[in-house]
Amino acid sequence: MKTLLKNGRIVDGSGSEPYFADILIEDDRIKQISTDIQEEADEIIDCSGLVVSPGFIDVHSHNDWFAARKDNDRFFSPFLEQGITTQVTGNCGFSPFGYDKDTQNKGLLGSGLFSLCHIDGDTSTLPAFAAAIKSLPLNIVPLYGHMSARIGVCGYDSRELTEDELRHTEDILEQALRDGAAGISFGLMYEPDRYAPYEELRRAAAICAKHGKILTVHIRANSAASTSYNPPVGGRAHNLRAQDEMVQLIRDTGVKLQNSHLIFVGEKSWKTVDESLSIINELNKEGFSYKYDSYSLTYGASVITVVLPTWFLSLPKEKRGSRLAKIRLAFEIGLTKRVLGFNFNDIVITWIAKGHEALIGKTVVQIAKEWGVSELDAYIRLVELSEGKGRVLMHRYLTDEIILRLMKDPNCYFMTDAWIEEEGKQNPACFLCFPLFLKIARDNGLALKDMIHRMTGMAAERFMIKERGLLKEGYYADITVFDEKKIGPGKSEDGRPEGINIVIVNGAVVVNNGTFTGKNSDGRLLLQKEE
Image (tube, rainbow, N blue to C red; front, side):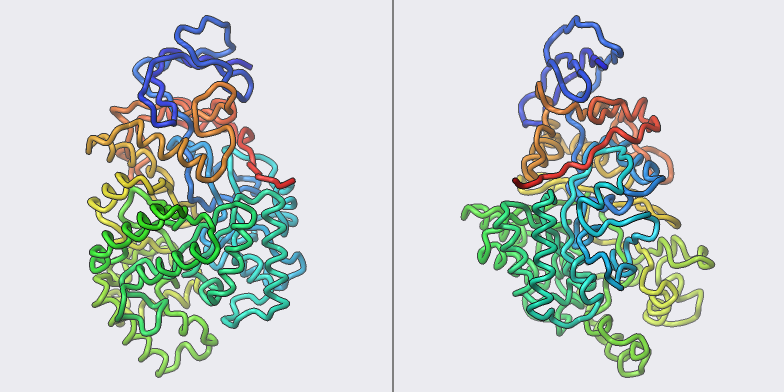
């Protein structure tokens, strides 16, 4: 099968200046890039007036949780329609593989955000997970989520692992890396990684460094004050303290570290941007590898329990409703809100449970007024109704000014951190995140070649994705064709993008005229196996 793209403006992903040329694709690879290619092709696509770039690489995704599902195209098609051809999955400590097959804690995997309940068969190892995937609409690069082995061993227990348990989880982790995982991820604001002591993290990071792979980390705090620390306010800004922990990990192990979704939650946290970026910049100047990723939106999706303190989550459920626990919780959250510049009006419900659909789209403040209770009581009730699995959109993560500043920073990579929910309100990042990046760049005079480099060639190099990320002869034909003048969020309620014309995955056209074609078997699981 040969496909010929004619007369496109080539932005090749390397950061080089654009140029005009044709691209000939044969089967799954780029055969030739040249002006006025005359070779016959099965399909000829006129790209006059359009940009032809490598397919976008989303460096922070959770779509591995949907990869082995029979109906997986509905979870991937919105990302294809925004030009994404490859997603790095397994972030924030979550992965659907890498646990004891006979564990009694399988239902806890995903920590309330994700679940294996819709997947048939075994996914306990990376080879088993790979075998469970019957088709993929796009490419995924799997990381190993550190929490999977820990949950398999002790569920959400807040205790330290015994030495035997620790060695067992490390054996699982190391096997996942040998089997082809691109690296390891931590989720230090989620159960149970939030309970992991530094030494457990250091040992896992050292294993990652030994294998020469990347460590991605959802750090303990993304705000100047947080319930991840005790006391929840005071002293050095907590997001900076969380970054200090990353600096120590890097210095102690030499691991290549990616700070997942660098955000600054609450207006009082926005003044820490300078120091945060300085920490990252200085460590890179010393020769270490410390980078980060960001979204193009000022809010993001999370699980409803994410703002609860560790001590409260570690209490038995019957003790969480005690008067003493509620008094302490009210004091800590109230103090945190004042210090942080973030409140319950910034938490929007996207899903609680069946029978409570009327809550979708409302803030905790609105619900509290409807119920005639305090905001904290409403919040705790929402947690209980959802059994801790409620979904929310958290606002005041960033400002438009901070997003632009991060986009200009050479240490920043682009991502969505979004997934299609089974039910309820969807995160708009599923539909518009990468087109919005390009609109912001266009509106603010940022060079297209630099933005495309961030989301293609630079991302492929960072995550060691071979023969992708560039428009180069011999490379795989992952290609996005778009209208630079039109690209951006559309006018529909969910912001489905405009300006994306053609998306090609491994040589196959999977998006035509901006719409998914229904072809869901051209993507691949990209493993980095060790000899």
